[in-house]
Amino acid sequence: MRNIKLLVEYEGTEYAGWQVQDGLPTIQGSIIAAVKRLTGEDVILNGASRTDAGVHAYGQIASFKTGSKVPPYNIMQGLNAYLPSDIVIKDASEAPLEFDPRRHSKKKTYLYKILNRSFPSALLRRHSWFVFKPLDVNLMREGARHIIGEKDFTSFMAADSDALHSIREVISIEIIEKGDGLIEVEVAGTAFLRHMVRIMAGTLVAVGKGKLKPDDVSKIIEARDRAAASMTAPAQGLFLMKVEY
Image (cartoon, rainbow, N blue to C red):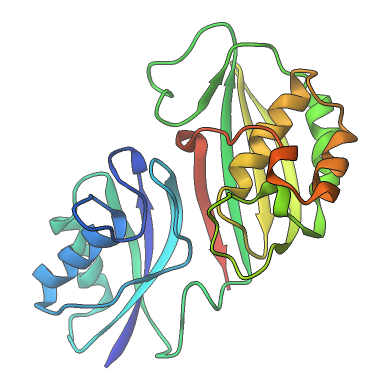
């Protein structure tokens, strides 16, 4: 028996998220079906992050155990032949049998893209949040400083989250102006709650619009109440960039 580790890239627009759901197209379900066609096996596929419907990934990590002797490179090539074009296996390698992509991860990095200008983009409409009102990026950066550290992020947790606790550590958060109205919010942490990065993005946009003061971010965290934070930013702007072990 071998444990095969996959590096996966996907465009999540057409999917109901990572996790298998009856009757709905999912990333996990698509890869499991491709493995079945390649090896004839019904496998359990574990992922590092259960991304939501419409969320994308440059660097999702997944793994499955197999009795197949197909070399990792051929597994990558074979799966790509069976997968739809919006899901790509970028690498396949052998990992220790005990390796679990989710439990063993040490750091995850997410990117949230905001398009802030007077007109939308035909090309970025599936990959960013179009915000018409001008944003003060410096105010957003001031607000973001309050997010860094190990804190109780109940205020940035989806109401239907099944997390056992809401303590998480945000290692870094950067807000980068890329030009032509594109703003990227890059957040790295040890782990994240459901909708956490999207609620952070929504709250920082509220700061950028002047609806909240930068110091209000600290008060929102201290409130430990989802209703204290701003809207959940749309799914299409979120990307899972990298998982580190």
